[in-house]
Image (cartoon, rainbow, N blue to C red; front, side, top):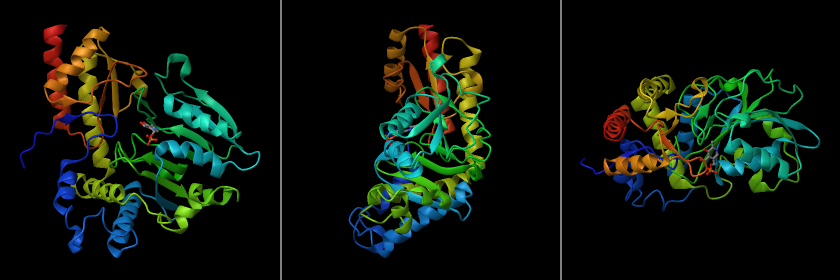
Length: 362
Ligand SMILES: Cc1ncc(COP(=O)(O)O)c(C=O)c1O
């Protein structure tokens, strides 16, 4: 099919695989012979039950989850999880360790503090403007969980390996790198991710929670804010975001059947990031902002010699069919988000453009 789609480096909502968008388009007016679109059928119908069950099963297979884990679909984005996690998991005077690696971790900490929960910031990279991931952290062995942000979308850093928490379960915001690589899920008590970067459209948040984490919720937590409500009803206590869940299911199918799983996805993601960082490291005109050992493979943040050139770069790139390269408004600069659906071909096109831009403006 001929399209006028651009190479999309948006940070989120972000690129989706073209094959997924085409499948949505093809099935839109008549979903599975119902004579209705997926946005028009009941969330209690057999057709939608198949959709949600398939998405759950694919998530379990892709993440290699054992029987202790539940896969849930919630609303309110990853930001709602910042509040729900301490609300459900920190009862009484129990405490949790948080690692502050930038804006999103800071917000997670704030939401726990608003509720008067006991939070220990075990490590922070604020001293160097969040350009690195802290090492050799001492965690409190009595903590209920350790909260981490696996990939820092704004600062362009990520945990290449998860730290040894001495058996304390990790609760992790994986919004911007979930399903980009295999992870050892045995270390985790809860994983959450706003779908709109690596798994689908906005409007749904994927939550993976281990059975034993469910027992901690105080009776005073309202029904819609309790994880056990979603577990008991397979995320269908109330009307879920059906269209978003359906599209997530198609992305998961693409990951399993077209890409071939997370090992292969990780290889492709590494190749894309190596190409872009390698090009920038060999020059000097474009300067990556994160420390080398902490670099994100998903969000490549970089600066040009001046803010004026950065603006010109973002604008010229768009004129050449490369979109979404402006850095987050809180930090400036440039950022190329290389999520799963961004192809190697897109990164090659970006590097070609960067060479031409440097030759003209360097
Ligand atoms: C790492 C991370 N966590 C949380 C969020 C907030 O997600 P949401 O908009 O779904 O609440 C974002 C959004 O960019 C993010 O990148």
